[in-house]
Amino acid sequence: MDYRSYRTSKAKQQAMLTTSNVVIEWNAINESARVPYSSRLQNSSMGPKVLTKEDSRAVNSVLLPSGGRQQQQQKSANTSHMIFSESPAAPGIPLVYRTPEGRAANPDRLNLDRRKLSVCPILEGEERLRMLNLQHNAITKLQHLSALRRLVFLDLYDNLISEISGLDTLSSLRVLMLGKNKIRQICGLKSLARLDVLDLHGNMIRVIENLSHLCHLRVLNLAGNEIVHTIGLAGMTSLTELNLRRNRITHIYEIDCLPQLQRLYLSHNLIEEFSDITCVTDSPSLSELSLDGNPLANSTDYRVLMVHRVAGLRVLDTKPISEEEKLRVVQMIQEEEQQLLKAEEEARSHERRLFTIGQIKRQWESVSHLANLGNQPKRKSKMRAFSASFVEEIEGTLHLYGLGSLDTLYSPPVTSQPTHIAFHYIEYTEVASLLDKLSTARYLQLKAISIHCCNLSHYDQLDMLSSIHSLDTLVVSTDGNPITSLSLWKQYAIVKLNLVSINDDIVTPEQAATSKQLFEPLVSLSNQYTSPAQQDKAHKGRQTAVREVCNQLLTRTLFQEEKQRSFEVLWPELLHSVVNNIVSELNICESKEYRKL
Image 1 (cartoon, one colour):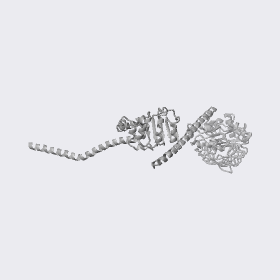
Image 2: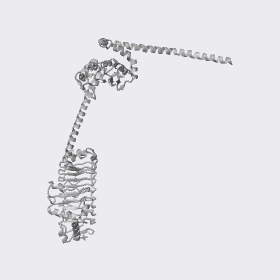
Image 3: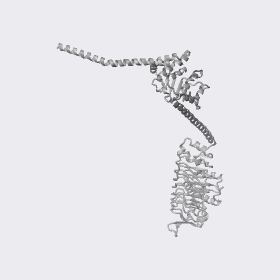
Image 4: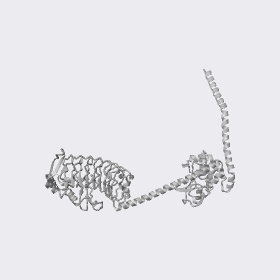
């Protein structure tokens, strides 16, 4: 197989180490794309040297030939100097040894890929070997490697290995490639404390474990496994790249325990919320991150939040982050923070409003309870002692809560000319005493009055609103206003105040006519005592006038009832007389018919 074919077959997992400034380039450590590392590691200071120049030359001589033809010639030469046989001491175990010429030509490297090996062969006389390639075979178990104490690079990609074992004597190993095998558990790495690159992608691993002693490990590939969380990463203080693509991860842990981590790949997992990756945002050195393919990445503000939360991030989902984008994100976040502060202030203001209104309501209810017990003087003194009050304007409506809020009618109001004033938890007698203030030029635009929990009880209290000549709308809540229990209060208010709307209902012509028929005499009489020249007399004689009108209504009602009773008394006699007359007429008609016959 020529070099180009060899290179293509390893496009998703190839590892390449060079000597210049101890550079390690591992192309496509994840199996979805080629990821170059040389340019990233050249400018970084990530611990002690990994390979000597002698080690690197051995690796380069295998992985970096000058061309395809040279690679083909080299492999043909290796094969011609390589002898395969069976070990007499271990029947069934292949024995591989090279001729002195072949070993002298490449003393530190051996390529045994695609040899259909089911077990690791015994390598005769290869104590100086530094690189061993066994990929694309059918090896099920790691064995017969104990003599290779100088080995620094071991590639077992695409085999059938189910357990990591047999590596205890390989303390010099720097790169271990075990991608695309059948491994279920991370173990057997205790003696590999100097390991620099570990590739375990494409296995069946569910838990990250037994890695905390690898303090020199810089690249870890666990893509394409069955991992559900990232607990077990702590201790790898030199790790600069971690690939966890295509797992089943829902939560990220311990990323902030990796102080040197620069590149983190989490694409195509099951991460849904920003709260699931909190430790990622706390990572001190992270510069490249991928989260595409997660439900989280579908969020509309995903990129903005990630750029904002990970301060040193330069690449997100393979897309570079420019300084202009960072500036836009900062501006957006500042605007959102301002909006959030405004919303919080509005929420606090709303809470204070509700608290104050609740306090006013409780005070009013306590005073109303005293009033129901007949302790009127104490109730008035309590009302005057009210300290809680609240004033607000909502869409042109001036809301007054508590007795103290009535001072607003004296001072300049919240709005220059309110069109609607609503009174809440204020005794109506106190409101009525200030209604004359609402007839001044300041309130010429006043059209509506709302009365909520003000103890409005009598018809004559409604008369006091007639001083507001521009009033055409009235709202009286059923809560805290006894007058609403009277069946005809609306009709009286319609006539007395000439209303267009009452309690949010438009007054129809039929309602106006009915109300006028019922209360026009009473209203006319009441108006006689409310002219400016007779206000004092009206105040003294109001009850007498109302009583007189009530007596007139009572007289009419009694007259109608007397007529009804008289009719009920005469009805049986009238009915008996009518029946007798009908019977007599029938008898006469029958006698006449009989005579004709």
